[in-house]
Length: 367
Ligand SMILES: [Zn+2]
Ligand SMILES: [Zn+2]
Image (cartoon, rainbow, N blue to C red):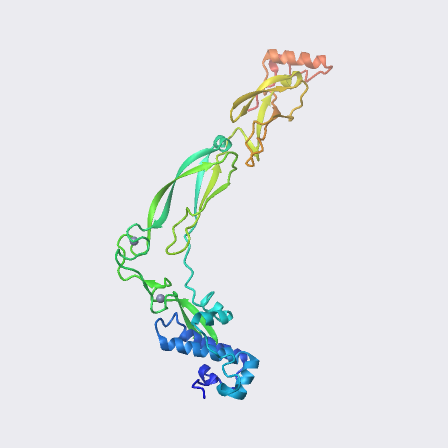
């Protein structure tokens, strides 16, 4: 004879229970008897094993039919209801059930909170973006409290696991068929309680510290480029990983240039004679001014490139160009001498230009 209780009785269900209700009944019991919620309670643990065994048999149609026919005393007794070695066995057997009730692995602790990421901004000039630069930055960040080592408990004491939620930080309520999980009101989701609070961090386990970091900004970064410093964000409250530090680089605009990737575009004002006759002109680059040759007969708006004088490419493949856009500017007023000579030039081209407005009545600057 078996001294085992009837499986239907163990789960508190009728003999004609359907599989859905069977599963709900087991979940309700498992919730109530779960070792995490009954630490050190051997009776609860035995009942938890008993219920798990009953559910294991009754949830499989073949085993259930066998059990219905023969009960515990039938042939092959102990076939599937041999019991579980330990609760870990149960969690792995019914991971589909415990996975969604208790989080992976059933007995798993509340996932520890990782530290938050920090974002900071660093302003650099275009020249600094071009050359690359080492910068020292200050970041205010959370670090583990030096007094309590981050535990939040006064030196010499330890945080205790919250008895109300079994250290999970969450409590379950059933409403009909729904299991509702909510933050434990006793520990406020922490899963632990600190009786003797560290006076330095007031139990938070964290201190703020201004951290000085050496930043190496590579040559060629663009406005908005972000450097990620792994693990240099906020320290975690407990157990988790520290966050990352993101440094967003803002490159100050340089009024001389418009940047397009590695190329720098700049405008150079030229006169008609410079374009017509050709000239050497000075073009700004980030390293100072460089002379460039305008060939005779160049048209307004044409561009001349100073190859390799632009920004370095981040992939290390050389530098871009400085592209000079030639902008023809027509004088808004002419001296008498200029006026006379320009007319002579026009006449030489066979043109008679605006004969009424000659000499001292030349065009005046617009107001
Ligand atoms: Zn502390
Ligand atoms: Zn709690």
